[in-house]
Image (cartoon, rainbow, N blue to C red; front, top):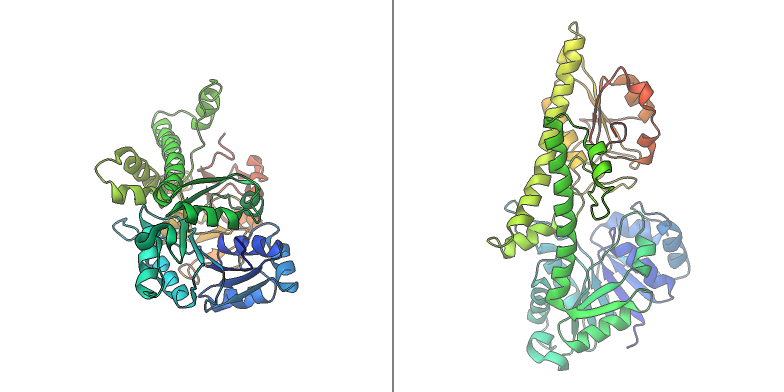
Length: 422
């Protein structure tokens, strides 16, 4: 199939790099986003997120006329939906963004178009998207009604990239492509082969949806083991970092490193999509989520203990005079993404419970998110070390790894990433 114009709905951490890569292959790409600020920044050839080398690719694509952004969908040959899929308070999936994106592109669909859902989704979401499209466009036929002869091709193809390496992994990683019919899959493969150097592996839509959820649930379960081990070792007065290093010398053991919890819009979210569909069967997956979700509270208790130990050593001071520095707010090292970040959640709870000053260091952002603006002071690493009595290391950014432990001897330290404790 020939795809001359490609539309990407959602210009975030996945959508914008995907749009840029298609544009770098000299395809006309229309990026769509509801955020007017993001649209304006992209049309100037700049980016509104942090991702290595993405700024150069976007600048070249915009300058050469292959990429432009808009707030209203326009006709195209293929539409890739890459919008958020959060969960509700009861951990059920929220498909509102997908529904809105579907209804937005429906008026510009034409016979022969391809629609791909890239958003990580619960099983059945691709079929639901197709149903929304069909309801909005009764003049067109869709796979659920007409099978291989449908006017519109529908497929699911989840992203599987690592923040900080998105451009490389978009191109090099294999893609799992699940069409609602074989012709839908073939059309999607043809689209991705424009830039994908990895293998495009074909399955059905439901299996493709479950594949992404399975990958992240597997990782979540392994992280939960490490996090639970860290809490056990703390109670037994064992250095968990040394223990894991020793255990990993076994040729068939590979334990991950513990941390303050699990964040991001994938691993911290996707397992709940499985639990919501099969609550009685997904027992291990649910437990892993509960272990990882409990870790921030454990870190908070360790921080309170560190404050108490400092006050015990300095009886002339009160809790109001104890300054806590939180090092890192992002959900993982060396990125600016704060989505579902346990570091951010822990910092907010410290801010709400500690009577004294709380400061934070996050070298990858220039300003604090709205929920912390005016409440928390963002400072440099040097200022944090100079001003703080208790240091809580939450993210192992490169900047923090360079801090020599020797300058922290007068501080009480809660090291959730083993940067100094290991």
